Image (cartoon, rainbow, N blue to C red; front, top):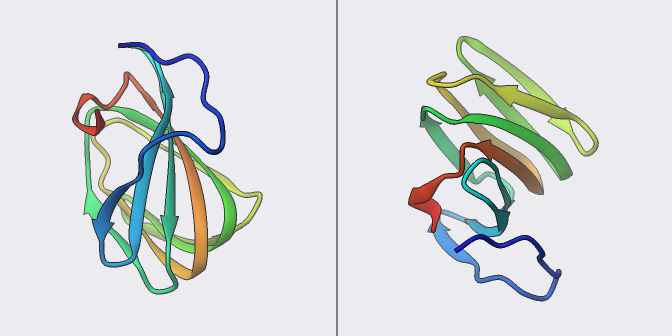
Length: 109
């Protein structure tokens, strides 16, 4: 089912363990928007997927690894992960990421 509108108080959180969680905000077959929260020190383990991912750092500071490059990003910064590129994050301080994926991540639904 396509979801075109999301309200802040709606949406079910999925506990990812280790101090992080996610919720799908909106999606079509072509595009998905997902919110992630991380406690300080939480890790989004290195992984890859066929989706192109764009991420906005809404709150906090993160150590972001994309391929063989690691950098620290803060609230207001953003990054793109090309398809099939190994990437991951570590929360330097508690924070929130808002990610878009194209096409949608069926595994998140």
